[in-house]
Length: 367
Image 1 (cartoon, rainbow, N blue to C red):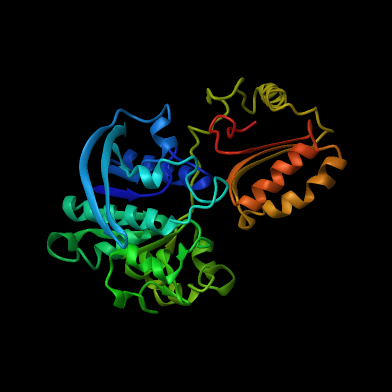
Image 2 (cartoon, rainbow, N blue to C red):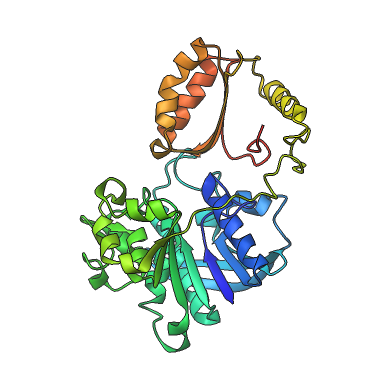
């Protein structure tokens, strides 16, 4: 089976948190079962500069119409692993930037244009190449399903199965109503049965409405997003489509994250020889300029900086944790207010708090 993955993140090329790991792990598992994967993602500056980026060649030009004129770009293709091809959408005006999203890196006022154009480009490739399945991950790629099922809903393209993978319903891809012009879709789809969401546009809703199947990242999350607390306004839609909704628990890459074999660690360890963990801990403290904490007071925080993940609670608790003798190593990218709070804490408590507002694959390894 040939599967297209449309995603904004894919480890090791582009990552701001767990999404990149989850998509890469799923791709690896499908390839191991004999399927052919093509992962499509934006050609971010960091992706092109990544040491893991394969040799790329041009794989087709792209022209899209937008409300302010024509958008031009190109696809770059390479082989990430056997039976796993990557396609990077190169539109420098949209993706040649310091950060993946308009959060900690600065406010990107054109977020709707960036990912609407990405999704439209993915839908066009799916229409032309007709994979067996198009899987869109989260809001950034959800519009691709809506476009494929409307503008390109003809001929053999109708045989392409579509799956919307909801890693986090917290991010609805909510944009002002004026952003509908970037989707290229007929105006009548801006309605409660389409992409309209309380007067705004929801890109995630486009995938949920039109997908053949909706997959949440666990069975419990599939149930939770049907309730107001986690559905955030889409719970009624999830309830309506519950026959098409299921939850599949994310797995753990036991090869990549095995401390007994992980070459990213300064010293490997396992249950029968645990002393290497102490070495990793001491090396991390030294590299980050942190003092040795009180026993049991070394806290490592890694992930996407959002209130949904509890980072705002952690930021508020830092003074109390430091007073109790803790040393904190904090790594992630995300919401600007949380990032600023963590950076302020690192300046206020040198030697006890280290905050890095970025994604560093090596630093994110277990210590």
